[in-house]
Figure 1 (spheres, helix red, strand yellow):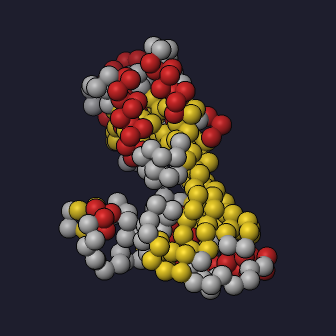
Figure 2 (cartoon, one colour):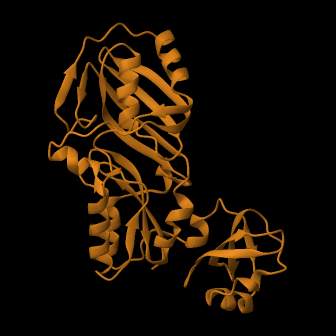
Figure 3 (cartoon, rainbow, N blue to C red):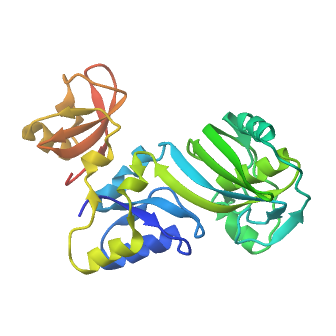
Length: 294
């Protein structure tokens, strides 16, 4: 079994737990991973990579993500989400449409963002969330440049905002909630989060976790997206089975003379993904990843 299962993750379970549950149904020797961690309180699109699908991760990480949710105003937590302890409180000023529109413009485009203390970023080889959970104080992470392509804000009630944001990789929605609160003259934390899209994977293609587990337990085929389809954003080159056999043995020279369609492309034969390759010149390429059964 090779490909991607798009799960609609429920609240209350970690991304790692979703992987463990699916691996248990597929067999302990199965290769299973996930693309783009969702915190336990969050819901939505969680692509699960299975078998040779685990090799897809480097080519899918850069995809745009779309989130929606709720920002609670007036209180900041140590985790910047509803699972943490309140660390600061502040009055919530009156917020109108003009103020929200200005805030949305301020946080659209390339912005500087300081990652949360509770994050997977490593300090001296240790995940910073582990240090934070132990109560070990550390200096803030250095700001990093992230990209927000579109941000929509609306007042949900007097103390919360509804939002929808599309962004590039590495953007922390929890940090965005914190920074929006400060920009609006108060403090804030992320109260609800739902991922609607991760790259080319959307909620329309996602199945609830319990349904996926029931299907696997019953021995029926999983709702699997094949490897070739999972890389639909990459241009492709079709080769014959002779070239495919050489590529699967690591012989990149099998592509010599074939016109390169892009800086990175996929190679298929008989409808199956054989490899992902990168351009060296117009007629020569190098292999980035070989797939044993696409």
